[in-house]
Length: 378
Image (cartoon, rainbow, N blue to C red; front, side, top):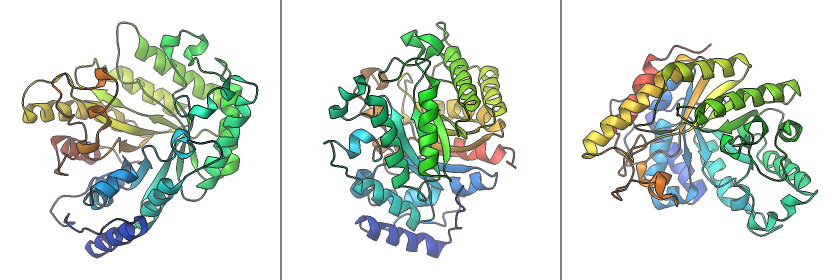
């Protein structure tokens, strides 16, 4: 982990200005640092944990007040899209890391750690790569990309999502692995190669497998199968000496889904027993089924978050929480191309700690309370 500098009122506003200048953003010290509330980053740090959020460079440019809000509450950021292959190399051989580099400068200039997301992902491939992936050269292209991407940010990124979302029970293949060429289902050797490539590119970064769908229990047993397949995959990678050090639990939650605390608790304990650290990497709470006014929606979002985070934070191998964005103004749930993610009434989601105007929501206070009640990590 990267040690973090304490933020005083003066260093807070100085940091805002430095970050804004580095990223070509206007400086705006409009968010006070001494409002009587302890930031989430400080609450987490008291317990040996970290709080952070996903960030997009475009959002920092569009909303000058967002940078100071991130600096105040976050100890770590992760680029939402700026390191994804489809984003950085739309044309073969023409790589553009300018936005990723600016986010890295924003982090470094303000004492924030940075996660890398993501090296290998089935939805990450540029359009020009799709046909090549079906040829014998596909695996080499992927391994070369992992090495190049991780190596480019060596020393600037403390954690990497090396392999993302390679489990899909509904594909009904062996070991519940995803059906995606050039990956042969059950071919853990290739995934292990990806981890080894990442380790060679950056000897110091903590390397993660990252996936979703662990929180809930359903009649089709999809959640149960995801949990079992993930534990099997981690054990298989470990048996091949792959340098996997962490499990990223995305934790895209939905009010109304069936959460069984003892099943989630057991999954996290079983993962910890395999010797990996656990970070909740993409947390948000979808309120698409919640009827009522804003106050009622916020109440149910906060209550469901508290239910999940209380169990998660009871596991001492859980060392951090990142929300998938800090403000609901930019929640992916409001603009998802999949109508099933969005509210039927067309209202924007209220899924994140800050509302569209950067005011704290009940979810912010639920997260704060869960950090306050968590046992200290060693």
